Amino acid sequence: MKYSNHNQNFLMTKVHQLVINIISSRAKSDSIISDSFINELNNLYQPFMYCYEPDTELVYSMPINAFFISTQLIVGDQYPNEVIWDNSNVAELIDRLRCYKREINREKCVLKYEEGKNKESLGLYITQLFNHHARLIFVRVDLKYAKDCSHLITIEDFHDHIKKLCQMIRNEDTCFRCLQGYAWALEQGGIEGGLHCHLLLIYDGNKRQNDWYIAKEVGEKWKVITGGLGECYSYHDKETKQGYERNGKLGIGMIHRNEPQEVENALDSALYLTKPSKEDQHLKVWLPNMNTFAHGRYRTSDRRGLPPISK
Image 1 (spheres, helix red, strand yellow):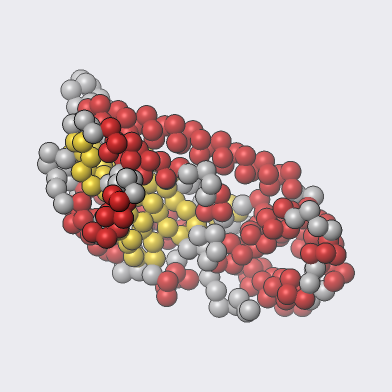
Image 2 (image 1 turned 45 degrees about the horizontal axis):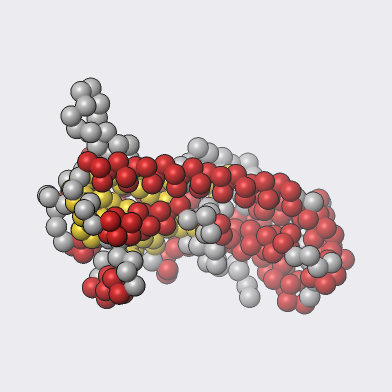
């Protein structure tokens, strides 16, 4: 399969996963090498090299950096279009990549530790909101990009779109009025590398109704922010909610504090944003100091000198 027409996010994801598969395998190098593996590497290498930008401010995952450094030690001064991978240099590449196993695993451990802290922090935040409100509306949407134009989106674009979204949330613009809390997590698909945002919005249940309509409004706002390139997946259509309800897992829509099962389900729905099993969904490329998770700060409105709830 040729990758020359694919976008940077897709290519980086493919290379990241290729390296993970190599260091995770206990097989000897010659057992990993096959015609399909060599073809995959030859198809990936040239477009990857044209996308990888070592002299910019972009930060890459450890597997991607390991791939770049290891390949350059092997091919030297050859131009990417001159490089041909075969049994001999592929075996050397595999051996070199495996030298990075400890560093790659250390990066994984750091990410898991951060997700654990995020889970604890988000859980406390949700509990504080329920302590202050008798009922809240939980809205969950996934903000992404249309598949036919995802190749146009860079990590810089994504970062800019999320900044605009956060500004609207802080200002309680339009569909964000009466918002009492929020959380979001930025991720990248483990197969095609699509950038997306899991967004949780929590509204005052005494002032807002109709979670389906709110989710629809948020999706429309995302499309405006992205210049028409964005798409939104809503969990609030009738069939989806009925499915959760049948399984006793409905944790979106109107949640009442005096209904323990509703509160538990809402907490589970919120904590999906910090689920540690989604390690293949981490960003593979990001900007320096770029947050990939955030939630509001709990403040009660009657505490003198402090900002209101969740701002």
